[in-house]
Image (cartoon, rainbow over all chains, first blue to last red):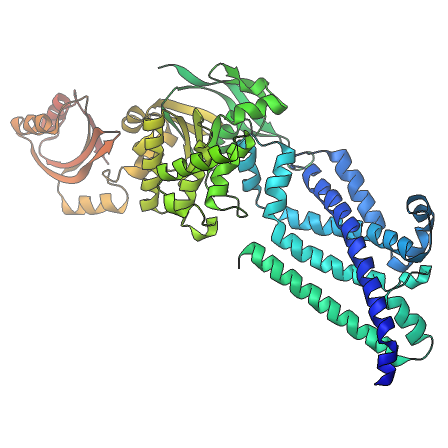
Length: 219
Length: 343
């Protein structure tokens, strides 16, 4: 018990860092993914801004980055991180890499959810003389909001997963703490308490996502 | 009446679905003139090209060739912002209603008003007025899925009328509704035409829809308009096989198939069907002429339909007697009516 009390402050601190990494990555990756995913949807054949070349380029971009295992991606993006956030190590760089990886993952999630919108409602909006940009804001995104929330919930949990390997580039967070102080120092209490917190966090995120989606879809 | 919508040699071709496949000609060289303030029906089987045709009128699809003018605006020449400005003056309703599930009834009706930049207070006033007009005043805060099909189509109509359009396009607007609701929605459309003077183009595969509200009708087959005329004329004197088939879907007064067999079994002699229009001889005159000629006949089947307030009757009689006498008598009555023997 006293052992647990001893690690508790660090556990809380590392939990806070993990949540910070997840939140910031979600904001940037979530926005980037929304833009690229919506771009894929509107530029596809039959889309409201049909643009075969842009659609093809976006598709290749997503397909190139998405399948890279994250631990390799994290190592490989260092030069780009130095250009964008000024460094290739530490928590800030980890956030950059996670946000970038999440952008491409979320792009596909967004695209898949938008495809399920009945084309009739878009046609109805077009018949009122609405511009493509207005249709994106007032029809496409609101109509898909419920499924999008579920998709983003799925993405947040993937981001929690990615945040666990931040330690590879010297980033902090629960994952790094569990590996460095739990696994490497043969302290199962650290490993298991980190694991327990992660499980609880994921459960809470999923419950929140389900609740929100249910409210939006009114069922 | 003044021309409102004019289609001049309009075609729409879609690229082949598969590489090396054949181009699809959905609309093939169609010319039509629709008058201001009329209800114009376009009837055809699915795949005849009528839904594509109606999407050319408001330019949801660009034409492949030809020209469409609405009023004095050559809408097929417009692109981008200038086209969208014209589209705000054309309302459209759909078979599946196509309401936004993310918005309430009021939010759906307000949508076109937002597009044209009507301010909030005015929007609210107009939405209330429109919902009152379509008989949904109490349902402003409901969501589409809480409404019946007929109610959802009323919302669709309110939305389509929000910006006071001159033209309303109805694409199979009643095909997803039950017969009773269909009549309600058609009556509402007739009221829109009568009270607001909106020119309505109705696309349908149901002849009942045409006979109930259309002043004139075009019959489409394989992308072409094969017959155009007043609803009464097309109904009482269809000239193409496809128009005849549509007419038969509503005229149950004409005995067919099993019905005809039963009539034959029950009655001696030959069966003749006489068509009465309000322009020809009356039933009384025809029957007295037959009686005077000494023909022994029985009325065995038939009925009288009301098309746009005009009478159309089909009566089948069983006739016994000498072939020459029958031929002579029928020839005499044949001047005012059409007589056809059921063989």
